Image 1 (cartoon, rainbow, N blue to C red):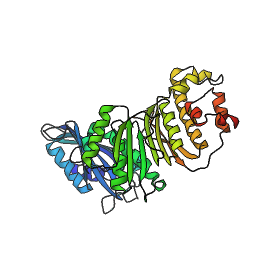
Image 2 (image 1 turned 90 degrees about the vertical axis):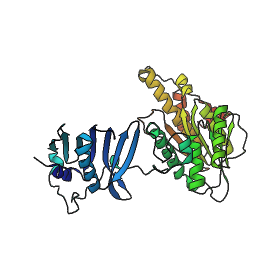
Image 3 (image 1 turned 180 degrees about the horizontal axis):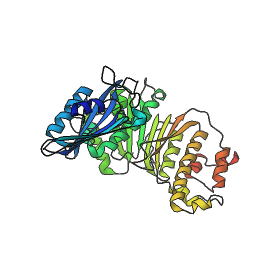
Image 4 (image 1 turned 60 degrees about the horizontal axis):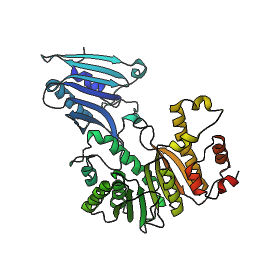
Length: 399
């Protein structure tokens, strides 16, 4: 039977997928999850300790982790479960402190693998992508004032467990902006509008990223219908000294506060509110448009096609198809106005089925609409964005 030292020497390496300490025997963490991660080209082991409702993260070297696990099993936990690409194992600790170790090797992975002098596998092993730490634009454990005030992280910069999805969403959104930075002129003031800004997590993130981290001279305007939300956001902007971040109460379709903009953001504007926002963006000649549509009811009421009827008769499938058609046609309509468009995943689809983002970058080269017009005819669709962009019916004449 293996000793704990022998087992941990064999199990803890870059082939480890996950290890879990459980069965707390004291007042410390109730559980610890461990996985190998790659940071700046170096493999470390991240331990995520669950303490009450909080999850605390700390990174260890291989030697440090082995010592940590041994001490944990001797004093704080009664069980260790580990799974790896080559080996799985369990350690159970009895009330008298006796350790029982059980292992199971994967024959297909275990053959031909050997340890090198540095106690890692000698055959160029790699950490799988899902085991790598995401290198976020806004870093964990680095306090960002607006994220603290908005309840996403604490004063030490640790992410509040219940807000981790929001933290990921903010960083994913900033990645979209990072991609289009070459489209924004760093030599002059850049005007950005955020329609339906709500609590303004992303609005504050945009300002912080573009002005504080990237040095752009930005003037950002947040617009929302809720008076109390606007008041709070303006208070926070003053508190942080964000002199060129302002929030106003107003409706998307009627806003006339600017005559031209560089970038417009519209997140979760319901149904045709997205269409009115996109039409405004085109009217202003926005260089970049980032839009996450929501509640695409209009096309759901209109869509009709005999060939597709066997599918459309199911309400949930009709709803999903209508949503996809709505956003696909919106993207094509923007292309007809001289934009290059992409439809991208905003955050992971397991969190919400409706977080697709339309990213449009102005090229000034309109694309032909004949196939899109034909599609709309076949599905009996007459979307609001088409009527707003082609008020005299020009798009129909192309067919």
